Length: 564
Image: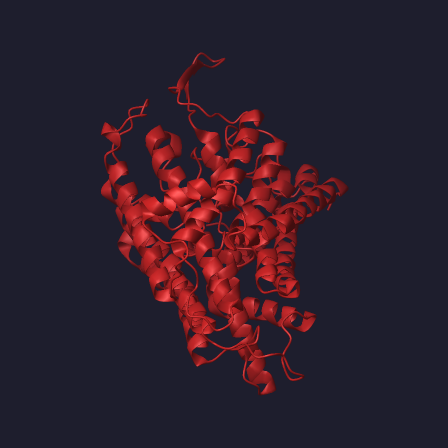
């Protein structure tokens, strides 16, 4: 690893933590109702919604509000995409989306997946990009954050029966966190050269005399929230590898920071909400250790490249296939690991062109439920699921009733946690298996051998994990794949949210007991190690066999010089 790469990595992590700590404390004050500078607007929105901000909800009503709000958002987005040809701000005269593509895209953006089976500049009008996709980027992110805050309340509150008010959490998150940070980022991106206009596409004549259409539009505003909200959907088809989405090293740095900013801040907000910052730091430590290990493994694999074609130049630069020379291996790898750890899904390089082991690590991060650091909100309540399992297993080992933050973890909570965890293998291994054996599913397979299996696995992992990135060699734009992947997105989002809200609803009603000499501490190095072990072992036991048939087999074949 050369010194310049080390410096870039240190700068990135230093800035990330330096920004995330105060943001986490600020987020705590937002959800405690201590931020008042937009209170008049906040009050107006509550009246429009028809909710009493002082009235809290039980977990069942909170969940129904989440589902109802997301259903309305899905229907509205589906409708405007089907009516795109008659709606305004369509200078390129885009036609209506097909029913299956509209379904897939509406589900994708509603569930914060942002999987794109289309090219943005050739499929979506400015109206859809602004009023449909950008709006969902805000509200789907706010939904995930609100749910995470409600789940945290269930863990830290003392014997209550409510988790907060979904509409209040949604409004406060959008007004005080997402909008201000997105506004700042959008202005910065415009200053870096990202377009933000409603002009028609430009036509240019190349040096060879050919005609070239140059797409533009209101890109900066969507890019800002796509990164901050861990949405990831690109305004342009090649996402953040496009020079209009990501023109400079500074725009690249800002976007990488925004991918992980709120997920990392959640750790410190949690410590403040639990009134014990050590709890938040312990979870941050587990996430950071796995993240650094994943980045190191991916970086080393990409830096080594393919040993069979190694020469003096490739040994110096590493595997540059599918990567922008302006970003190189280190910035491409750092982005790739961050986007798969955070269920963001945006890319500044093509994951399909990574080495087998480099691609496998990013795939494994999605398969674990993307809890390192995870999507905004979703990653943290996913990590709390692993905390419940870790505490339960630790209790079994020492022969004591498991406890966490003074509350007993009993059979109901463990069963609900396991139920939520099953959504990943059902979507990836269950529905993915159908595409591997049914003729209509095999039509999407463009590459033979283990790499073709890796592409299929990545598609179904990305959809179920609500990530949105892809191994681009897989032809997922068919009626069958649009439908099946849409089902995976719904499964990965709501089969996780509902059980975790139920866990929170169960815990919030329990008494908190003071710690004793026999209480297993959950802020120590021992607990941190157990938590990391549970994450890796559960993921390994579930997905190792299929990973052995895909990327691991491909790596072995690569070393032998076998091609398919």
